[in-house]
Length: 167
Image (cartoon, rainbow, N blue to C red; front, side, top):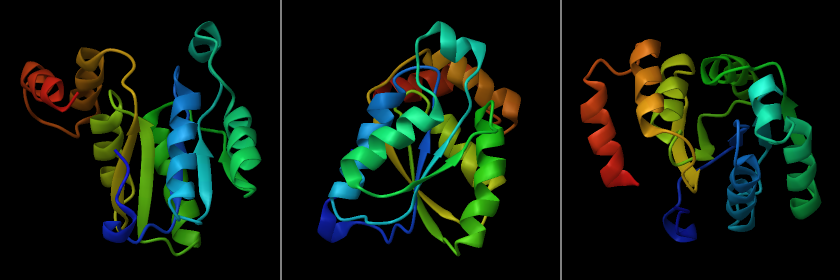
């Protein structure tokens, strides 16, 4: 869900997570934020693994080109991250160098809980605001990864039940 422009947070950057699939919808969500008046730096983070290739997804550079075409703003690309934790670890120094204290995190609704918890853990000092594209993938798999990352110490099934109420 996108914020109402008059009640929106002080977002200083938009971080777009390239994912195994539905990445273009994630990019479109970032474009919608930009069009709401968030004329701030946009950063696309990800890589192109074999799994992404199997699902016919997009390179981070494809997402950046799509965003640049529709916003007329240059996009920063971080293309060394093979998973969510690496995305957070690699984005944090970029945001700190830009003196960002509040940022939008844009990903699919299914990936949102793990992505937000991961970015909060590995990139402290930044207030994160979550914006999502339509869900894609397995909620159960996402919550198993949350437990594996050590960012949520609760029962996976409880998390899945909670996720069902969000989606």
